[in-house]
Image 1 (cartoon, rainbow, N blue to C red):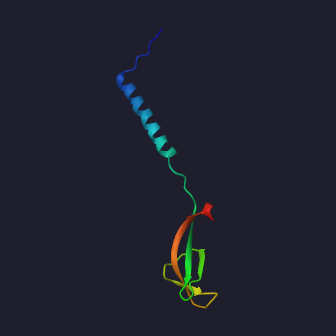
Image 2: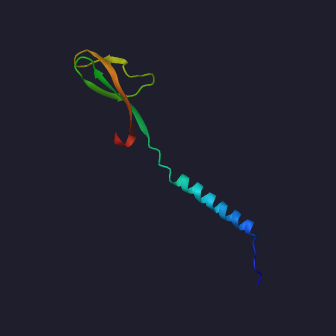
Image 3: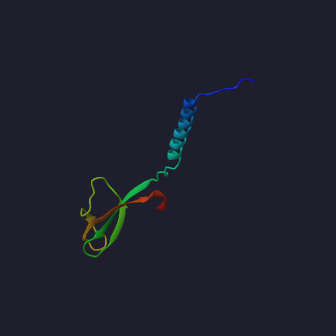
Amino acid sequence: MIKLQLPPDIIWLIVILILIIYLVYDTYARRPKKTEKIIRERLVCTKCGYVVEREFEPGDFIGLVKGKCPSCGGDLKIKAIYAIEKEKL
């Protein structure tokens, strides 16, 4: 019978490679899954307090007047911009 005798340096190299592969795999396996988010904005009437929620449009910012209130004719201002998960809609 032939005995296979590996030098200690080779054994340590194999152990280190196995450890590196395990750590890389473990790091990528534990990453949280990315959830899709939708950006929304809340508009509030300055006179009567009427509230509307809409999709965010590029260029919008808090304090921007985005139209007239359908109930009293006052200005609708953006009061909040936020993101929610798509699943929660």
